[in-house]
Each structure stands twice: as C-alpha cells, then as structure tokens.
Length: 106
Picture 1: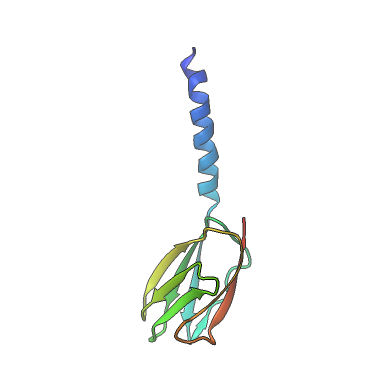
Picture 2: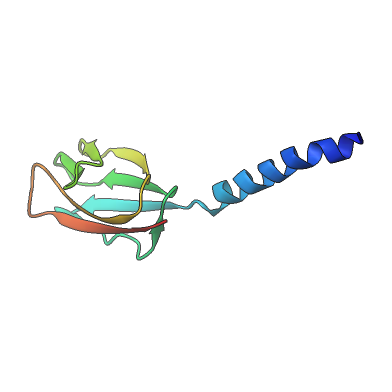
C-alpha cells in the first residue's frame, strides 16, 4: 500500500485535534477593589481563565456547584481550564458579597 495513503488517517487526526487547540482562548479575570472584573460574554469549553488578585486581601474564586475553587493570596495569579458548558455562579469564600457568573458554551 502507498505510504501516503497509510498516513492519511494520522494527518486527518492531527489536523482535527489541532483545530480544537487553536480555537481555545485565554481570558483574564481580575479582582481589584473587592470586586471581580466582568467575565467575558462568551466562554467555551477548553478556554483558559487566568484569575489575578490585585487586592491586598486573600480571595477565592469558588464555584457554587463546586466545579472549581481557586485560592488567590494577595497579588497572585492562578490558571484554570474550563472543562464543561453551562452557567456557573462563583463567589469569594472570604467575601461572599463578591460574586459573578461564567456563561460557558460547548
């Protein structure tokens, strides 16, 4: 069998998985002045959120459905890859009035 024909399934698989990786985006959500910045209007599964705490206080980004719990000491950064679609409400465990919602599409 022709080696090129044998390689076609592998090439197709690499192109297919490469297109998913290329479509993932990175977004930053900042905490400053005891508030979360507004989340992006459109997030997708596979996107990365960079949580940045610019405050002098420790905060968390904690999902009400327990799907994530990011601990952010003062002046720190942490990353999270979105793993599922849906609306996810989040808050700070130390300051429960700090809230937000992520709208995540497949």
